[in-house]
Picture (cartoon, rainbow, N blue to C red):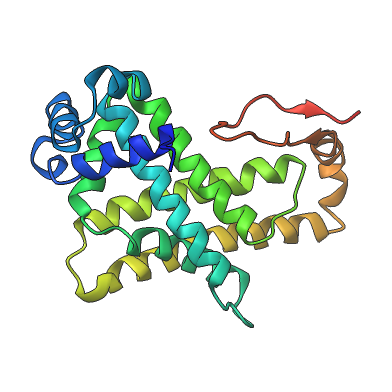
Length: 230
């Protein structure tokens, strides 16, 4: 069976995981992974030019894949949409075997030179959630939904890292409150739109927003420029 580059990266990642809680996503962990996985260093550096940074991103992508698989097999039934979003975020965090792997990643992506990579990873996670739950928006809502969920997800991860409650019940309660806050804002926006006295004031902004549509993102995209409708 032919080995693919992804197979080799998976081997490197698996070999690195035992070292990350102690050494972080660093050169030390990357070098140890190369040795433990018996992979040629030249090949390892060709596949991961930034070493452990690329492995940290691969770890995040692996978690996204597990979350997506769980969403696809979930029976949401008559669950409210906001509860489906909360469930998806829970799936993403519940699959993490060791919080320290995420904590070390948060530390890495807090560095200025890697902040863009961290933001992109979170944006992609939230995009996967919206896509899996059937979002079909193609205007400015495509951006606002992902930006809002990114903020909720980021805050929830930070809370979860410090949560010592049984089965992380405090984290799930925190997540529910954050989503409730967002839903309240959406209800306020809707009430303003439906108010005959205020509706004329929104004619201009609404026209402008209707001229905007979201591009079909490619893997790894961050929110980019808005494209006028043809």
